[in-house]
Structures are given as structure tokens and as C-alpha cells.
Image (cartoon, rainbow over the protein chains, first blue to last red):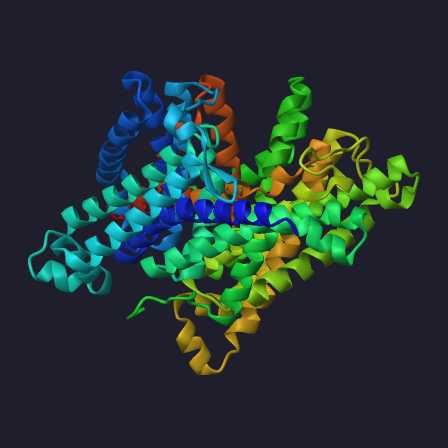
Amino acid sequence: MNWTLLLEQTLNGFQFGILLFLLAAGLTLIFGIMDLINLAHGSLYMMGAYFAATLTKWTGSFLLGAILAIPACMAFGMIVEMIAIRTLYTRNHLDQVLATFGLILFFNEFVRLIWGPIGLDIPLPEVLNGSVELFLGIRYPAFRLVIIAVGILVAFLLYLLVSRTKLGMLIRAGASNRQMISALGVNINFLYTIVFGLGAALAGLAGLMAGPIMTVEIGMGEGILIITLVVIVIGGVGSIKGAFVAALLVGLIDTLGRSFLPDILGLFFSNDVADTAAPAISSMLIYLLMALILAIKPQGLFPPRGA
Amino acid sequence: MKGTPRIIFIVILMLGLGVVPLLADYFDEPFYTVMFSRMLILSIGAVSLNLILGFGGMVSFGHAVYLGIGSYMVGIGTMHAVEDGIEWMANGFLQITLAIVFSALTGLVIGAISLRTRGVYFIMITLAFSQMLYFVAVGNERYGGDDGLSLYMRSDFNGLIDITYDNSLYYLNFVILLLSLYLSHRLINSRFGMVIRGAKSNEQRMRAIGFPVFRYQLVAFVIAGTICGIAGVLSANQTEFVNPSVMHWTRSGDLIIMTVLGGLGTLFGPVIGAVAFLFLEEFLSGITEYWQLYFGPMLVLVVIFARGGIDGMLVGLDKWWSRNSTVKNEEID
């Protein structure tokens, strides 16, 4: 076994997990508090990447572009919430799935109309473009380390926000009993808009950090949306802690499965079988994990209290 | 049965679907036969989805999987028939039988696990299973992988019906649509259907009465999948091409849209929805390249304002009609 490769892939899995967490945290908050399935969450991720690409071009600096893209995404999310999402809270899940599916179609065409059908690149500044030596001569791309660091920082800030601030208190109260808090005089509509905007900002952050690694293209949010849904279902819908654990689990299993499954299968079967079966099985791994977990715990790993 | 606008509309729609190839031949526009053929096939898919979604309240977000299974039965069979000379593998009856068997087995496995969960978990787990099978198809290089398989011939029905002609394939689709409508009519009005519908409105009560709801729902889930598998066989023959995108999750979304657009839980709603969906796609993409820019918001508006779909609007029209006609009768009296 190649230990350098294992370490590298573990870090890659960690980094993918962090991106998944940023998406899943918003999605699970929106579900937990507003009881809304938002399929268009992947579109917000895509918008984050496109905003960052454009703003980087205008300002000439990725850092500046990224910092500006986050509030842009938040504002965008809040506008979408006020125009289209707001009426869906009282509807059943089927209506929500359909309407937000419609929003995906709209956003994809909207991006095609404005930015054109060809994907964009986000150029990284010199500092982030290279690799850093971790120890013993093992090098790892600097930008991926930044993603991991930013993600952990955001997870920590989110924890502080939810457990230590007034807004967090309202969010938790809204999640457990929404009639009660609106009866207590909290402007629930405004709270919903804020939470949706927060989710959009997190999704946008994930998108703008994924942009330089993958290409910025139409439909980039859809593949990762499905994986994010798997994450929140495994973690227990509505639980941020569950989202964090499940995101890292899924990120690691997916990445490690893709890189090591051919070798592992090769130990048991002929190389031919291993080479043909491995890609299919490794793409299925996270879905198998989800089916397994739901078969044992139908509410996910960390079912939210009161549900 | 009185000739209300809704019934008249449905009768005209079904009769109209029955004469499309004749009209298309008369006006020398064979393109329309193919387009309506697609409508019929997706109608069958939507009718089958409606059984569990509309009548059973099970929001399956992976129904396109069975389209894929049916399609691949044709694709794989035909490939072996053409490349390896195993002619019996291109037999349509065999392919339909295999599609039924495999769709039923797949439905049994997916249903048995998914039906343990409820609500949003059910939506997600059906979606996850469809993604799993999608990746199986993508990863399976032997049968085309991501690129799919081109069919060099359509299924062979022992000379009983020669579907190399678009018109005869059209009527095969039409007959199967009628059969699936008849089957779902009989099902939903049977005791079995009553249990399924009862479980939709109040599952706990059904269980308290003493019905093993899970088993009933599982059987409905399997039946719906099986019918959709047959639609998959037809779909592959229609397009003469099979690739994984036939079971992409957006396809499952399309099927849900058709069912809801036409009218959930009504017999003809899914047919109306499938026809309307493909018409809109054809019409809007004729006007603008960015047709989804209009289709997306339209979908949101339908969800928000037109509850009950197109069939719901027709019911509304019926009410308006009967109110007006009673007023007239009173005037005559």
C-alpha cells in the first residue's frame, strides 16, 4: 500500500467532505426550520461559482472576488426566497420538489443566457496555486488546505451562531415550534428569509471554493446536490451535527472508494473484473451506505429532537 | 354520464391520439407520428407513476429507473442479436417478458427498503436507488457505458406486428397505453385500490383497521414499476438508441411533472400531462433556444396556482358549466 497516496486521498476526501458540509448545512437548516425541500440549492452553489468568476475578473483578485461573491450570493438567495420560495412553505413535499425543480431549469438557462454555454475558469493567485510541504517531503496543494481550513472555521462559526447568539436562539426555536415563536412576536417571515440567505451564502462559498478545482459550468450544482441530499438524509434531516459527520463520512468514502477500490477488488478477483466493476461500484458506494443506514435507522444517524 | 366539457375534452384527446398517424400521413408530416409516439410512451410511464404517486401518495423520485431497465433489455438483446448473431435475443416478446421480470424484481427490492421510510426520506431513498442503477449503466462498458448503444434494428414480434414502421409502433404504443389505463382503472376501483387510497389519506387508521399497509403499498410499487418497464421497451424501440440518460434523475423529475401537470390521482390526468409537457417543450423550443427559462417559472406557477393540474381546471370548468346550465333550466321552468 502506498502511504503517501493514502494520506493524499484522505485529505482529498476530507476536502470534498468539507464542501459537502457547507452545502448540507444550509440545506438541512432550511429543511429543519422551514420544512422545505430545496432542490435548487445546487443552483445557489453554481451561482456562487459564477459570481466569484465574474467578480475575480473585475477586481483582478481571487480573494476580493470571493469576499464579494458571498454577500452577493446571500442577497441573491434572499431575493429568490421572497419571490418564489416563500409561498411553498405551507405546501406538501411534492409541490416543493416540483417548484424547486422548475427553479433549477430556470437558473441553468439564466446562466446560459448571461455567461454563455462555455465553462469558466477561476484563476488562483500565485500564493494559493502551489503546493505546501506537509512533512517528510509529502506535498499537498495549498488551495485544498485552504478549503479545509475555511470549512472548519465556518463550521465553528456556524456552531457559535446557532448555539450562542440571539439569531441562533430564534433559529433553534423556529426549528422546534414555529407557531409558538411567531405567537411570541418574532417576525417569522424575516427569520425565514435570513435563514435562506444564510444557506445561500454557505452554498455560494462552497461553489466559489470548488470553482478553481473543477470547472465553473452549467449544471455543476446538480451532481453535488444529489450527494448533498444523501448527506443530509444520512445525518438526519434538520441536524447540523449530523450533516457535519455525514458529510465527512461521505466525502471520505467516495474519494477513497474511487482511488482504492480497483486495488482492493484486485485482491479478490481477476484484474479484468476489478477494472470493469470498480468504477460502477465506487460510484454506488455512498448510495449503498445510505440504503444501509436508512435500513437500520430510518431517521438517519442524528435524528433531530422532537421529530 | 353527461357530456360535460371535461369528458368531451378527454374523449376528443383520446380519439385524436387514435388518428394521429392517419392525419400525419395525410398531411405528409411523419414527424408528428414520432412526436406523438413519444407522448404515448411517456404517458404510459406517467400513468404507472400516478398509481403510486397520485393514488398511493408515495412520492417516488426514481421512477425513470424502470424506463432504463426496459430500454436496456432491448438494447442488450438487440446488440447480441446483431453482433453475435443470436437472433432470438431480438425477440420483442422475450424482451418485454424480461423487462417485466427485472422491473418487478427491482421494484420489489427498492420498494421493500424505501417503504420502511416516510416523507422526505422516501423521496430521497428512491432517488438514491435510481442514481445507483444509473451509475451501474454508466460504468458498464460492455454495454456502451456512458455513450450508450445504438440499435440497428427494432424488436421482432414474430411477424405478428412489424414495428419497423413508425405507424405500427405508434399503434402498439397506443394499445399498451389503453391497456395500462384500463388496468389502472380496474386497480384503483378494486378493494386493493381502496386500501392504497385509504393509506394515502390516513395510514394509521388503515393499519388500525387491520390492513397490512406495507404489503399493499409494496405490491402497488412493484406493479407501477413493471408497467413503466414496458414503457421502457417501447421507448428504446422508438428512439433506436439506449443510454444511461434515460434513467437520469431529471427524467424521474419529468415524469413527476407530467403527472402533476395533468392532474394527480385522476385516470386521464397523466396522459393529459404528458401530452401537454411535450407540446410545451416542442412549442417553446421552437420559439427560443432558452425554452427552459420560461418552462421553469411556468412550472412554479402551476404548482402555486393550478392545484389539481389541467384536469383540476377542467373540473372547475365543469362546475361553472353545470351552474350555468342549471340557471338556464330554471329560466325555462
